[in-house]
Image (cartoon, rainbow, N blue to C red):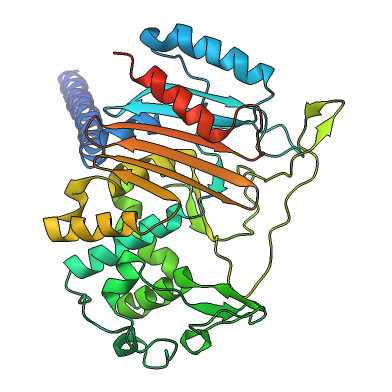
Length: 367
């Protein structure tokens, strides 16, 4: 009898020990999980954290702007505007909205993960990457392109400085499907296309011993949480925008005829980014603190002043670009930490993207 009681007590003790250990393990795991999430968020920008919580663009507008935004949205619907906009200040998403679809063939609406060709915004990123390579002592400003690419013969005087500040023009034959460093020429011909972007990419690939997409992800991807960025024009993602020519049906602007993506030796527009990724990258590349020194930032400012589709005035930068019927308009004021992004896949006429940026900027000035 006593033996049975002793066995019973031992069993109870064992159960208690198992229960205590189980509770301790559960509490530890929860604490560890919170620490991991906390550390992960600490390594991300505040804007990246805010955007990670958003999928739909039609979010609740902050009360200060609700009346003006509601009126604007009604007018955009009346004008049959197709596209989306986002307004940001101090890492807070103040307002956003989408109109129409990213692809007439399906019912997908504009969202934060909708992806479009970013056109000349890619050049801004390339400039920042080249400056990063300079800051890392991987290239020198006076270094000639021929020192990196001996087979490049289009311009023997071209330097890394010229590539950074966009002080050059080179071309390739559009029928050459596999252009290399040998393919460039300085003069333009009837069958050639400008290939400045291609040359910068080839130089970076040679310096880094990586392909262009890996360079982007290494320099920007993890740091900025770029989850929907790729260098691939035909990846078939359901959240890709499809560009459209202007057309009407019964007097109403309608997405009917898609813009065909041209297939040439070198596409000037290879980079696709989501709405969220453009905002994260835009906040990063236009900040002075990104460039480590006044000299590096001066290089970036010189590039901005040399670029036609960019308007830069002190802390304000405006970018307008398009690719294959996909339009991107970006405004930032780095002094007030404000950004406005307008994207579309249709050539809106009654309210253009540029007009919409100006209207949103007037609303954003309300404080």
